[in-house]
Length: 405
Image 1 (cartoon, rainbow, N blue to C red):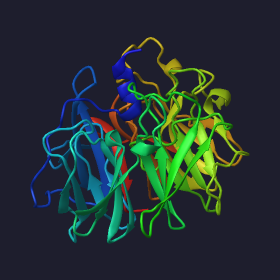
Image 2 (image 1 turned 135 degrees about the vertical axis):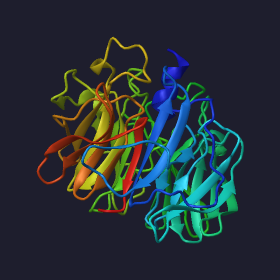
Image 3 (image 1 turned 45 degrees about the horizontal axis):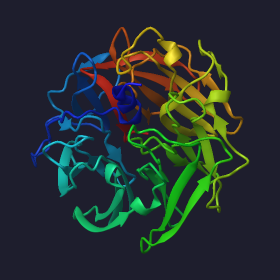
């Protein structure tokens, strides 16, 4: 198995750094809609990322990256409920090892509000905020969580999770979520090839009030592993009932028996729900040309038990040996309550870089890097109507967020 394939499915990152923007002034473009693109070399394993704000989404408009902020390659921005927009350095390093915080100013321009130095080789990827004085960022390759003040962008303390490593793996903290005063931290437990060694789900729980360790939870009966996709902050989320759902990526379909799917922690509980699980290796997908999905690379919860996602299956492009650019991603809807999955007919297939997702004015937005164009399509959440090529972009659309809900 080639390392670059593992690299794609684990983080879509590379050892080549993208440049960082050190300007304190806002860029000229403006709007309440954010998206980022990834511009790669022909093989797809290195390149640069760009983030911009726009006001017009539709009409087949085309956007280049002339008004964009450079991003680290292999990382997605993170938008918190406060409106803070966090931008990470290159996932595998680079020259500007800083976490940067932006906001949309009164002119709806991206304005830098502060930055904080990060340790070398940290693979920083996820931020969750407890309040305006306290937030957490995962430094995944270091088995480290940094507690910081998001207003001043200064470090407060550090949580070392290395003691939670299992034999032969790193704890590798993934996505995080705060519920009822508890910080839930996914523990990927990856080996040197960024793969799990066993079908086990683990998370670490901390008290947000004082960051004290509560406990580690572990489950081997549900049959899933690798809870959360480490660079997708919405791969753990809460439904209307207060239940937590976790998108588990397993071995991305590379190792039979180390499976991907959906797990749950019910409201008021702090253990995995052993009565619940969706195993993708055992769940046939309605409308899929091959029987099963390998994993869900991106997901967004839309309410009423409906989770929209980008499902990936190597069987969708079996003759393409370049996993970076193979068209193996398909839009799907996961019914969490009925444990079913169906393909969204009419959406084009995408490669592993073009997996942007988000909601905008009653529609689910899908980024797509397909054979015809790079851009965005939409699915009406009420009617299911699909519109393709809503806008086109320069590069592969990797991130989307709209403040216009």
